Every structure is written in structure tokens, then in C-alpha cells.
Image (cartoon, rainbow, N blue to C red; front, side):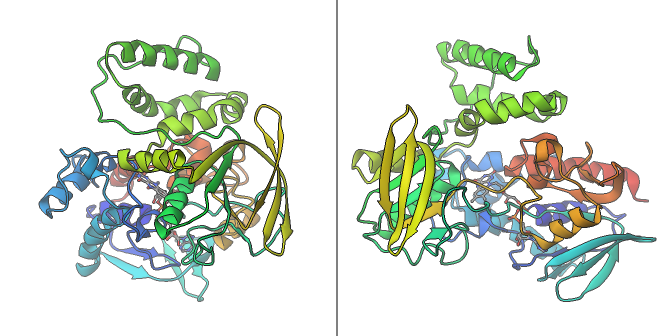
Length: 437
Ligand SMILES: Cc1cc2nc3c(=O)[nH]c(=O)nc-3n(C[C@H](O)[C@H](O)[C@H](O)COP(=O)(O)OP(=O)(O)OC[C@H]3O[C@@H](n4cnc5c(N)ncnc54)[C@H](O)[C@@H]3O)c2cc1C
């Protein structure tokens, strides 16, 4: 998705002669999120918040939905369209730049990148070699690493997005989902729609599900001055401001959305220790407010819990011993009690691996090994400067070699939503205008 969006944006620059897009899965325009095929895998913001492509095109996706007669963005609930529709939107624009000859698509994995005298030479796993002036790494969300304490077994599914990953699960099996975020919710809804006849159990440290979205309102007095530049000080001020606005009838979602726009700057300014503090104490609470659910998805979860088809636990997995039929799981519940569960499947929905020295992507492994890249701040993603250019092991900015999206987590933290990716691409497009002659 990010690679295609970037190509569509860069194709408008006359200085750019040609663009090549490599994707190992051939998922051009869609990637992982927007290749979803189930109608209940929905965007988690109303369509207009997904944005368009160019700087002026702030509601491009919503406008396209209206033009193609698919949804009216004024219909708040109806504009949480299936994710594939956003994929259609990007793919439609991508096909225009391919048809015009501005971009060429290659279904191939890039395994290595190396600097040479004329730019960056890429080597693909099929042996293709080509040198480019600019390279943009838009590698998406790496699968989670195996969950600590869970023994290896075919009954543990780590990549829940792999095609057919959930197919072996029987309708009367007992499933334990680790994680209670957006991916976990998608998987639970998916299993429920398949007709699971056994309650599904979800577990996370705090047992918090994402909260429901609400129609946006203009924030009349956005909070911009922070009395104390610490995680504790910032969040205390945010909570106070949110309560004050709620008393005036402004939904809490409005304050959160205003605050989100400032996170990259606050994160960049924060000390490493403050960032660690945020990750340890506030991350889970922040995420459920930040990544929200379409109203009817939230209602489906409520209904499942009410009908005892979904059980959400707060606690920690102490161990999960593989058995012939699944797992015996020992759990330490939040609050102190111990608990045993016998399940047939464990699904790891803890979200993408953020420590890039642990991920399996051969390109990332080779870049970290050669020193053309290094780990990002707090061990997250890859190190980039404020313009998203990669910083090498020696601390030198690799001019023309960029990372976009999830890999830049360590530098900006708030980097995964379509709107954040779009903003990174707009900034880079502006830089390119001045760099390329
Ligand atoms: C399930 C899910 C739902 C989401 N829903 C929303 C939403 O509703 N709204 C929102 O704003 N955001 C959402 N997001 C967040 C965001 O929009 C996505 O994370 C976004 O798709 C990221 O784009 P990307 O290009 O970085 O990754 P992707 O779109 O996944 O693309 C990465 C591509 O790179 C390829 N690749 C990786 N390594 C190599 C290599 N070495 N060589 C060649 N190809 C390679 C992969 O095969 C993949 O196709 C969602 C994310 C997920 C995972």
C-alpha cells in the first residue's frame, strides 16, 4: 500500500524518469491490510479519514467512493467500507501510472541493497540486479515473533494473515487468541462468522478491547502546550483536557485525534527513558483509544460477549505446553489468581514484530548485517533521520535510501495508519521536488 501510494505520488514529479515497484507477493496497491477478502474486515476509521494521495486531495478516498457509487461519506456508519475497497482505490490509480509507462511492476523479493557509484544496487531473490537513484523501503508489518512460553506446535498459528491460516480450526475447537487489538478482533469476528460453536477466549495483559469510534467534531481548543514534558505530565494534561471537553459535549475521540497529530513531535523530543516509560505503562491504554472499531464491529463483539461466545481475560501466559490436541495453558490473571486452560489452538495476534533484528525479512537481515542500516531508537524498526532516510551503522545518513511506514516506528512512533503513511509520502515528495533536477 505505502509503496504504491508513494509511486502514484512520485509519478506526478516530472523530474522522476521511471519507477520500478517490487513486491514479493504481487500484492500491488493492497499489501497485507487491503488484500483482505472478507466483507467484515473493515477499515477502522470512516472513509474520509483514510485521505487521498496528493496534498490537496485530503478526502480523495471518500470522494472516489462517492464518484464510483460505493458509499456516501456523509453516512458515518456506512463509510467503514471493507478494506479491499481501499485496495481497489489504490490499485485503480496504480494501474494508471503503469498503463502510462511511468511505473513497472515486478513480482519479486528484494534480498539485498548496496551502495555503488551511481546509486543503490538492488538484488532480488530471482537474481535481478538494478541500480536506482532513490530507493524507498515500504516493507509493511512483519509477522509477530513466536510468543514466549508457548511451545512450538502446528497448533500454534503465528501468521494469522497467511492464506488459509484459520482453515484447519474446527467449529467445535477451543481457540485462545493472544492479543486484544485490531488483528485479534478481526480474527475473532472471522471465526464467529465461520460459525464457531465454542466460546473463543482472548487474553492480553490488561484485557482491553479497542474502543468504539464516534463521528468527529472540530476540537475548539486543541491542547498544544504541555505543562510538563514527561509521559506522566503529558497524559495527565490530556486526560484533564478530554474530561473538560466531554463535560461540554465533545466526544473523547476528538481530543485523542487532535493529540495524535502531535505524537511524532512529542516522541522525537522525548528522552529514551520517557519513551520506554510510555511503552511499559501507557501503550496498551493509548492503543485502545487510538485504534478504534467501526460501530457495528464493536457491537458484534459486545453481542458475542453477551451471548458468552467470547471471553476476554486480563492476564499473562506463564506457559503453554503442547499436547496432541492443542495446549495446556497456565495463566496468571491480572489481580493475582492462577488459571489453567485446555485449548485446541493458540493464535498469536500480538501485532507486528517491532524489533527489526528479530524479523525474518531477508532484506532487513542483510541490511543490518552489512551495516547499511541499524536498529532504530529504543530498538524499534530501522534508524532514519527526520526525512525518513536510513541511517547506517556508523551513524551516516544514506542519501536517497528511505524507509516508509512501520520500519520508522523508532523515529516517529505513530506511523502505521494510512493517514500517517500518506503524510510521510507527502513530506518526501516535497523533498524530492527540491533534490531532483
Ligand atoms: C490487518 C490490518 C488492518 C489495517 N487497517 C487499517 C485501517 O482500517 N485504516 C488505516 O488507516 N490503517 C490500517 N492499517 C494500517 C496501515 O494502513 C497498514 O499497515 C498499511 O497497509 C501499511 O502499508 P505498507 O505498504 O507499509 O505495508 P503493506 O501494504 O503490507 O505492503 C508491504 C509489502 O511489502 C512486501 N515486501 C516485504 N518485504 C519485501 C521484500 N524484501 N521484497 C519485496 N517485497 C517485500 C510485502 O509482501 C507486502 O506486500 C491496517 C493494518 C493491518 C495489518
